[in-house]
Image 1 (cartoon, rainbow, N blue to C red):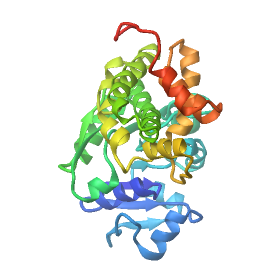
Image 2: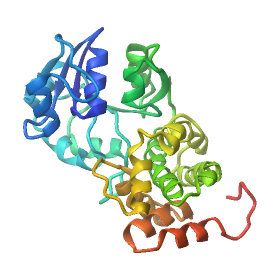
Image 3: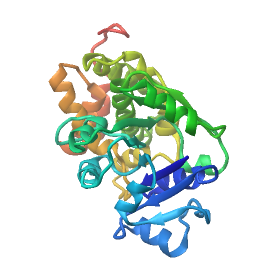
Length: 320
């Protein structure tokens, strides 16, 4: 199988290197990006060394011509721009797999919707999400992830061709729930970082339970299956996001509470704005998301916000 991977950050470079053992793989990056420049100069980054057989390129035309299955691993908020560039080349019939988690802030659209809106050619789009860190996979520690698409045949094909003992892929059947759940878990991860930074880590169990319920209500209102919130895309990803030292979103939240700078990408900081927008649009109360948003963007004092969150009026645990 031939694969193209667009995006040479830690996840994109890992996927390209890992799959090049059994497939012909091309890894693409912008020649202006530091990640690409490092790989071009040294054939390695802090996580791995690129195998000799892996082709590295900054030529988007070459990358898109290389394979019919194209994996995209970039920042969610940059997808629209890249999709517009992709549409300038003939990509009819290709399958694009989004290995990224987020919702577009400006529109509230899911990432598959962004792709289908920007590429004016018949294509297939899928998402590949769930728990797992490059650091763990590189050390040979396995995990499970989920692939989903509006077309079950596309899901089946990706899972059957790319699942392995290290990354076991499951078949999703709810593209709305899978996308929203995957994006939202990063916001819950920031909330977990808030708790760690405030010395309230013991509340993370409650955060997990209430966070999954909150996102389940949103998924249901949007027309998805609320059970997706309890699957690999969301609750199944909590250990890797709410507890792991490798989690950018958790660490971002902790550093924010402690007033320390944090330079790594934390997708949840953007996604929370989109979730607030969706909550208002669909009439769903999102107290955890609202707390994260208020602390990050409205000057709410973290301790006060957390106190208010966990002292909300008592309701039935599974109220609608």
